[in-house]
Image (cartoon, rainbow, N blue to C red; front, top):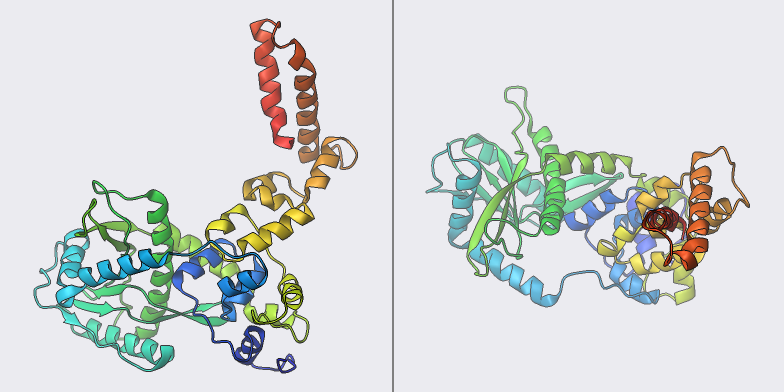
Length: 400
């Protein structure tokens, strides 16, 4: 049993108790952080990620195993490609940075590779900050930071992030490098995968900006974190690296705004009942009660980003929540939060007739009824009547 919690307990101890006394914390990476920022209203994901809960194991224990994640083959292929890109002291990687982002600088013939070895994430974070300071002081040189460690405050709790690489240019500016194993065909890649990589890189840029702000001295301006990142992928169907510069200003602004909207983890933890624990080894009924004690904000987009999506979808469907139909539908329906409320409003059984949403639903229901009534006569009706029936049916389909 976890130790009893009080409001005065340190946050770290609270999160350890929520995770389970013998369960190691799962690091919050940039991929998960970008997904969390995309759904800032989900307190369930915020507290689980903040406590370092393994959501894959948790989903399996709840009886809704997740199909979300990368295959072992994809991970192996990605690691092999990344090693190829960084071979020979990152010579090819730095050549691509120079070619795509900084042609005006001297070619990176003699680049430095920073030493980032340290104990624990806090030690590696401090060593990374020191390496960036040293690289800024040695202007005129290219510097490569291979898997640096960055810290970003997320809802009052630090998240440690590890980008593939950060390059310091001769002018002292910093560039984030994302290395992915999906191909770039004829100079372009899958837009959805590029978008996901851009959102992930935006998290790293935000973390680097915090490091840059701490390095600012009165005698020198803050180092510039470039708003274009380098995306490195295999060229066509080969294993040869190619790259593209990706502007992430939009993703950075959205992620920054969404992270600022997150409820502080301390506030969420303080509202939970005593003794709550998310240890996957606990009985299923107890674990289900623990998960359900934290409100979730489910949307179909969660299926591609969260390990608990199947569990949350099942509960959302059971309650008849309109969020199962998508955020756009939810926004259109205003104060009607369940499918039952929507159907009652459409049938005239509930709702204020002056409400524009209710009025639109009732009009759509009328059009649908007219269309269904006209269906037997549609085969013999003139063309203009058939067109009218089709238009009415399309309008009424929104309330099916």
